[in-house]
Length: 286
Image (cartoon, one colour):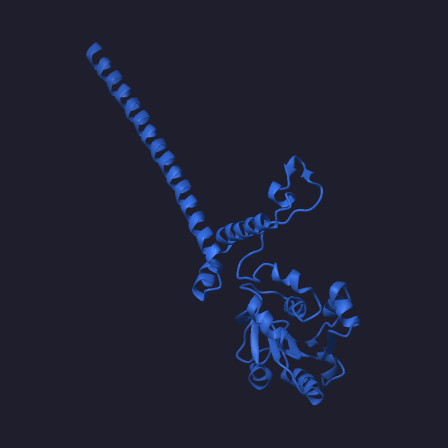
């Protein structure tokens, strides 16, 4: 698989492509990449790549000519491509989208800067706009690197299938808690089930913890998994058990809160009564 990144600052994504697992995948020939410097396609000697937007407004836009020429240079010798503009206005990036992109032969990513790029580039070249979240960054390169990092690791032979199967989102849920040596750290012990050697009990514990974490942090994922039918019958039963336990805890909490309110009202009423009685005694003395 090949990643082609169009950027004003190629040194930013280059650091990623030349480090860690990605560097090994490139060395083994599983992943290829090309960094295209948009400034190399500018017309003037100052390498100008941005200008003010028509209609006014703050900030600058990337000029269409240098970016278009850069894209044309990519198209000239690429037969299979998929052009992505990394933008906060795009569709939110997900693990499912990462899986879809990992099945492509080549991805071309446009890294925006300043206030974005000319709409005509989007209309003429871009297949889809992708956002990595509901926030704005100054660097499209960082966002593009996030997408590349999520996609390349799903390509066959980059990472073992077993590792991918047990990651967060792989089954629609967040990953269970993980522990390593030592067995006791600052008085906190590794759960006994993980050291007992019973693989079936470990599997059940991990599923339960995964469900608990997902229900607590991302209940929308559980709802989606239920709607799509990706949850096992065992997981569904565990969710029902967890829901019953949560309701039990909530009911106990509400009962304690109700008793606390009742006791506070009683104390307030008693204090008010004592005040009234004291006022009555003072009137009689006068």
